[in-house]
Length: 338
Image (cartoon, rainbow, N blue to C red; front, side, top):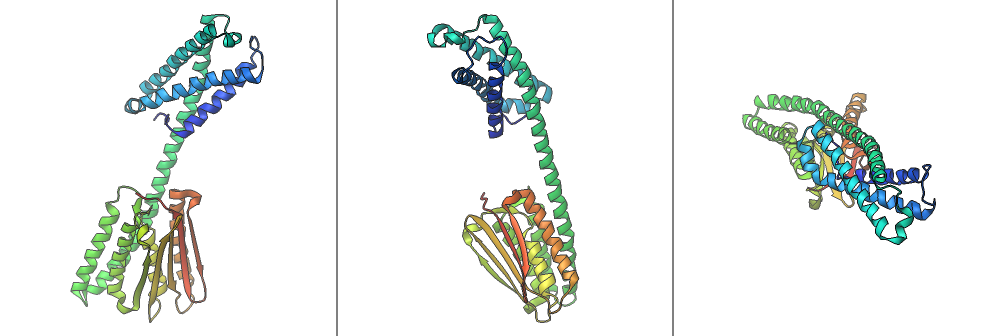
């Protein structure tokens, strides 16, 4: 895969390379130009025009280059740069012949000027294209590794959720066939939502719907012991976030906070947004301390922290805390809408 010639990174790279090349060329022995800021500026302007025009041509050719193989695409890219170099060099030479103010920059020999520029272009463009190609390959590999990590982390969540759901359904079949059927329908909706996802990102509305289906399954089992208090900012429902972020945390709130308590409790889910999306999940603590409960919570939190890091980097945060009676999980991510 060739580099992305239309990216801001490519433009900045070309600008830096051409500025450095201007300083090197000006200091080369045998130059007739007077070494000054003015001559450096003129040479830098010429090289910037050359570099940015080459990049513009490659950006226009990008759809064609993407359809070509690596070898043929590389040959066309390299040839296009050399053709632009010859055209711009010839234009620059003609300007020095017709404008007296540029006469001091006129090369002694026309053909030598063109050949020198072409030789420099061959070397510099070859190095730059190779660097950009390697950077693009590295970026593709990182994206592939991150996608693999996301899939692996999701795979660790889904069997756990399926195991709990099937236990719920198995328990209900003996006492309430209708409830068991409803639980199966809720479970099928959950897996339809997760398995039909084209990528690792979803909308907040879809994540909330997924969590509601899960809670319907749990309510059939825990009945009046489980209550849920939703506080949702409707304006945030189209925000995007990694799939299976809220549901596993709510599942842990139920499993580690509500289920161990004889009288149950309330899971509070608050979602609001301003410059970022804020999700807070609160559940009561069990009546007695339990180290396995804390380990279970921390495993889910580390899992989701890793997925948020992959999706948003340092812009996202997940924090957990507890006081004497409640356990809190707070998520903060950038607002990204579809």
